[in-house]
Image (cartoon, rainbow, N blue to C red; front, side, top):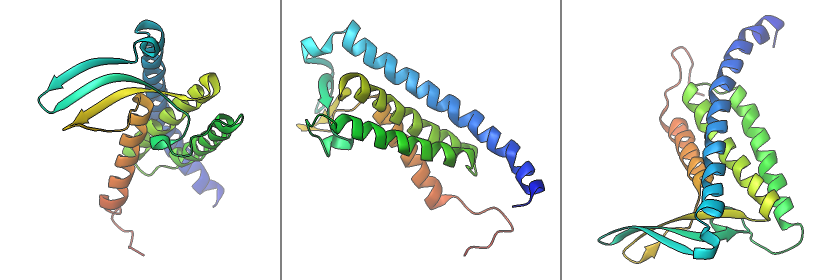
Length: 179
């Protein structure tokens, strides 16, 4: 890439980071505040479960779960370094996503990447502080419970959903041929 081309892309990259980084910070703050409230304010570990909503077959509870694995409890273990290995892996992924965010082609992609990064960092903080991730949102219907999750997980899932939709449905800019 020539210096002129690099200079021309620098403002766009800076602009994408100005969208994605605040999205990451906002999600991270909401995640950590919700976890603080659940642990210190509500004291959910002592209560174990607090019913919030029961509407017919649907329900929403706050249920305390210490997730020692990754998504949906996969790769959970009690090894002395398990939480550190998972924290390092999530941190490495977050760094990769930050680089992607700087090069994001659209504002929507930058914000979606911000949500994923903020969520990943929120869960890394939990792993380093507690050795596990604080999960507490328990949604259920017709006797079937979804995996208990937190604000960080919701941000990651929504961000990935937006990235998938963008990859599947965004049309290439005019003048670019499909390969």
